Length: 504
Image 1 (cartoon, rainbow, N blue to C red):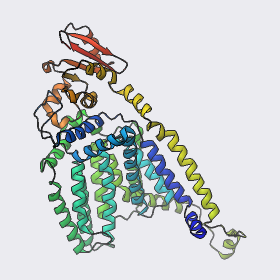
Image 2 (image 1 turned 90 degrees about the vertical axis):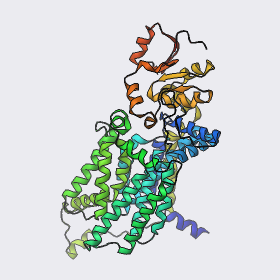
Image 3 (image 1 turned 30 degrees about the vertical axis):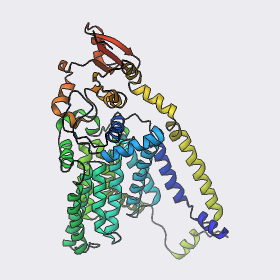
Image 4 (image 1 turned 45 degrees about the horizontal axis):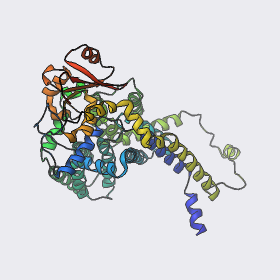
């Protein structure tokens, strides 16, 4: 028993401590307060499906797009999120999605280590890559795309090594397709991988994949595309995804669909990754497979078009990042002063301690203690406060129209509410059960360009019963002077107006 414990302690090396402290730090940073405006309509979706016993096909939440087709492409994720909320409230949601971010970071670390990159360098690049994609952190289904992308890339590497079967791919893509419409990225990654490996096989490059395995994977990708449409909306899930990717209105007006902000920390880290790739390639020492090139630069295009794709780019570029990092380390090593390799000089430089220090139980105990103490400190300082219900409630009240919604709820009747875009999801979550309808929320694809453009122009044709706006919004001052509207509620976050003559 003691020997087994000692052997286990000897495995707690400095590399293990470094990697697990890295993942603990990422988990702690990713446990952010639940302030994503879309979180609330995702929860409302799960509640609606459970209460109605069906998956809706047309919009149920708004008065501006009532009856419009609704592709709830995240239906399975929404159900899971609502189930988590019912069992553990917001703290469980925050913890689980921080865990998803951490699991994706583990995938990134493993992808970097597969290239032979030293552990310290892989840990540094993992932290850079995780923070570069931190604009997507929060309790939101799209984080599942990051995790699934990392798992897929690791799976493809294992398949190339002959350790996985091609027909594991179709059920994986099917599950992804029912969690989020971005499963198309998985199909694209798989297809680019096959194309690159096929090219290397044709060129008879070293390490090429056997043709029979390429053929099997090609068939699995085709089967994945067919199986992916086995979902509540069929082919509409694919059409929806393509429509969102190609919509100029969404690209130009939704922040997360915009290009990265290269003045922010996350944007600067993206720049750093791109410069790492360029610097590594400039050394002339990078030997990468064609699939690694294709994946890195195809996903770079998506990342430059939209910051929500940055985490996917970081994962897809990880093998090339690792090879570029190795090339730069090798170049730096070659620039150091040469070592005198004559026997006499080597003997003079060699130092042999009386008792060689290797992995020992004592060192393992020290490493384990360091891991526990520092890891616990990280969680206690950053993650644990954001998992407290009181802290979360305070953060929500400071960012979302809690008091304003309370005032509307007290009116006790269904309303048509013209609302600020970011408030729509929260209003749906709080007011939909009593029949209140919002003007707009984060489901831009449901509203289409006409309704969204009208919102952007703040059209007066919506005829709402109430208006909810941020208290600092310029329209608040105008409405206060408008005799058609009366102030119902105002705090530091939001202001509510109701139409004059409106009877509660």
